Image 1 (cartoon, helix red, strand yellow):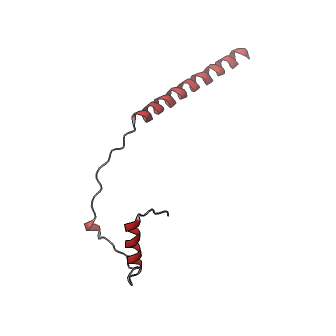
Image 2 (cartoon, one colour):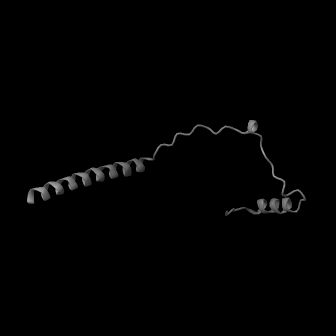
Length: 76
């Protein structure tokens, strides 16, 4: 894990490291935790553009493969 800290955080970490109880972890009981807010993930406009572009390319690819299959059948 990479952790980036600034100077005041480093001083606090050094002070806490020097204490005798540094290996005792703090914990929260389940009742004390805060519920996460509901978040709806919506793609950004440029992502919608990419999704539409890929859908269009898939349709074009499918039609071109079907056309090749018909041409191969007609030649045979």
